[in-house]
Image (cartoon, rainbow, N blue to C red; front, side, top):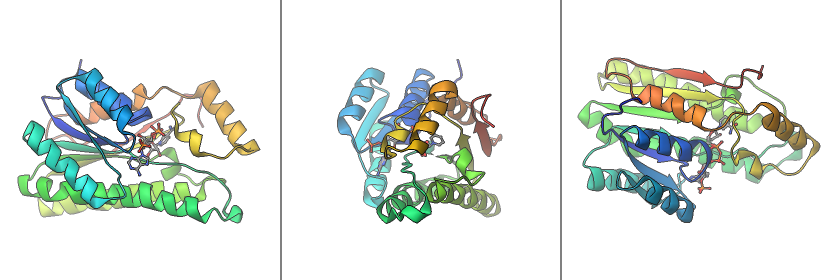
Length: 245
Ligand SMILES: NC(=O)c1ccc[n+]([C@@H]2O[C@H](COP(=O)([O-])OP(=O)(O)OC[C@H]3O[C@@H](n4cnc5c(N)ncnc54)[C@H](OP(=O)(O)O)[C@@H]3O)[C@@H](O)[C@H]2O)c1
């Protein structure tokens, strides 16, 4: 069992998949978790399962005000904020030639603007206290470019580039805010639900079915990063099925 020292961690995308499992694992190891997503019933169920070390707020990462409300809630309920897991994301697929412009914009709003809103909400506090940890879910799609997911790949590359730059800025500014970018491979969650039925989706689903991992492996990576001593950074972690090339 790893000790996360009563750390207070905000988690976006906590209503399912990686975020949900991470909340469970961090709380089981002593953290206090602030759960964020749009599906309130799911958050309520998870919070009551975890008990007094969890609190939740129905919130949309597209709204900066919603993200700021999470920070307020963390401080009101637990008195402080140590880390944030900016994890909410969507992955509707399709070739660029299909011109699914609404999907492109939704990914920009959630996968890019959502991460920026989450950072904008926590940074004033982290900067003032000269301490904090920002963990962000990119993807192996943030390290390579694949057909059928061009905009998704772009959003996940953005996360890597932005957090890399921010990490250097924090070092220069002496604000001591650590960052961890996680690059998951195929993890069995609800992520593929938003992909329209197609031959490509069937192939991806089959791959996930055959070799995909359960979300606890990513939760474990987050736990590893969050439980390190204050002078140890874990800037990046790639976690994928052994059979994923
Ligand atoms: N599964 C994989 O193979 C895989 C691989 C690489 C990277 N990732 C990344 O991992 C992250 C988590 O995905 P997952 O696999 O756990 O899929 P998931 O089960 O579909 O979870 C996605 C989460 O994001 C939340 N979300 C989506 N839009 C939101 C919004 N506008 N505001 C607030 N929350 C929002 C969803 O909650 P609500 O719908 O309730 O709001 C849900 O909790 C994503 O960033 C994804 O890109 C996943």
